[in-house]
Image (cartoon, rainbow, N blue to C red; front, side, top):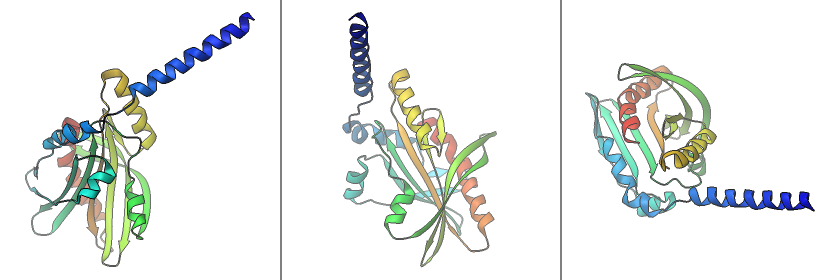
Length: 215
């Protein structure tokens, strides 16, 4: 009888801990609309000395699907030829799932090759090693090279599970459930893969300091 009572108390304790954890990880979607966009003000239209940005409007249905108003949909150009497109989706209170870029692209019927790789960029006189997901997308008009990764607290990388664990840890440590999906893309000319990769890394060198500081 004593053993049964102990087991009963253990079950009650575990249920209480689970309820506390679930309550602690709940989010308020209104905070994404009211507070989330202010975090993105730290991502300027001009990056570094040369990158000049231009925002493009999104349909209201996009905000509804992604459940946040904190979205950057912006092209950056350097000179007359180099061009990068930045798509950034930010949650002040993170939802359960992100919409993976490859899933969205695949839904459009496009052919995509996915690779997980580690790159190193020099940003602010510091070498940063970053795990990213690389997507090579083929369209009728040509090919696009894309890098994307997640940011949550001190975590930056392509591992979705580590990002979720970082959100949970940040929630309990400092009541911070912010996270972001950062995606950058450029046109890839066949035979010039190295040039496209170098351009994305060059852009990241100017973008990362603002990502680390603002998000």
